[in-house]
Length: 124
Image 1 (spheres, rainbow, N blue to C red):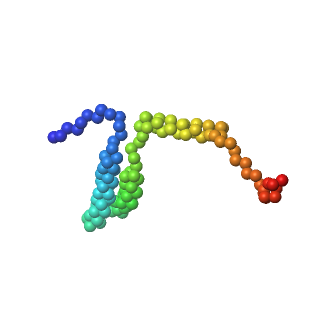
Image 2: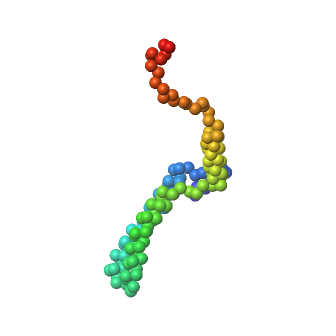
Image 3: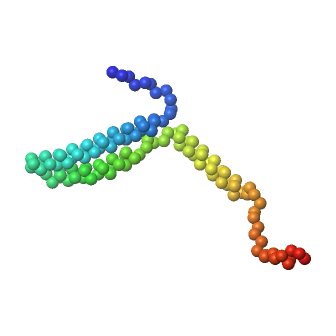
C-alpha cells in the first residue's frame, strides 16, 4: 500500500486536485440520482405500502440533486485566513491609491479656449 506524503506546506491544493475532487462529487451525486430513478421503478413494480410518499421522495431527489451537484462542482474551496488577509490588504492599497489620485491631481488641468483666432488678428 502506497503511503501519502506528509504535507509540510501551507500552499493551496493544485487546480488539478481541486477539479478532480469536484468531478468525483458531481459523478457521485449523479449516480445517486440514477439510483433514485431505478428505485422508483422498482417500488412501482413491487407495489410497496406508502408508494406515493416514496415516489415523491425519489422525484424530489431527482430534481434537487442536479441543481446541488452543479453548485457544488462549480464551487472552490474556502479561502484561508492568509488569503483573506492578502485580499483585504490589496483592496486597501487600491483604495489608498484612488484616494491619493483624487486628492492630488498629477497633471495641470487642461483649459480649452473657445475664441477663434483668424489670420488677420494674428498679424496685428
